[in-house]
Length: 160
Image (cartoon, one colour):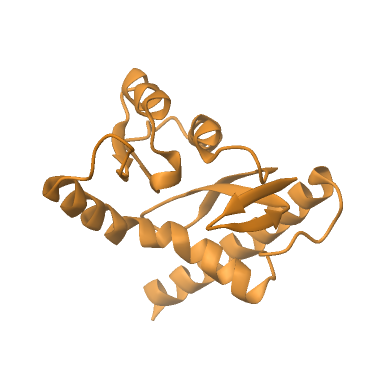
């Protein structure tokens, strides 16, 4: 369905991904309708990205995931808050919050690489199918291919 972003209507789906910030592997992805707010999907991405017994130390997320429910979720699960801050209708960002966002963006670029590369090379900016189920499979296959390519690249760096 529809969402309006920057006064432009968009029809389709949104992909929410959990990415390992140390190596750039995709841990989990979820698709949602375009009209659903991003803030609803941080707990899903966080929960589905845990594949080992090792606890998640910190979650990095863009301004779309900012909000009290997500901060409460992270605090309840003893996970450090790496969600970028955004201006609200009642308060502007302070200089400290602006600096914090800049520091977080130096780690978050790893997450954004996946979206940029998949849009550039895999035409992920457009849904290929008419149902969310088929697009989920497409998304998972794209994720697997990305992880394999990422792993090969990392192995070449270590063996060179």
